[in-house]
Image (cartoon, rainbow, N blue to C red; front, side, top):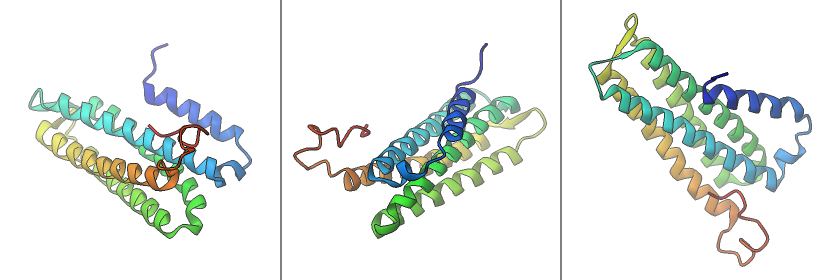
Length: 177
């Protein structure tokens, strides 16, 4: 069975979410570290889909609508999964104003990505889209996701304290990539 990677990831996330009824692990420091890493991973996957769509669009004057929709669906899935990770991280960040501010910025950018995706899909004309319009929307999506990635790196540094002596020895930095 040949299913898109985003669909396989969706099934894994659904299985993990349905089996996790206890919120306590996501509210701990360890859970917070995991949510940072998970959100970063979804962010990277969404960005990869956006870049691939840009490259496809650069090859011609139009892009088939089904290609646009496939990548838009993958970007949407990953941004929604990242949004859920950041919402869980916000629970850990409740007593940390700086972290809470960063989480809010991450979520705002994901809202902007969603708006760009909607515009991209609204611009579909029948069975195709104009390549230049797709490139413009995908570049804006990539820009927002890159901003999130930079913030996530800063959050990693603040949250993990990579300067501590025990960072590598204790596994404190386990989720850092």
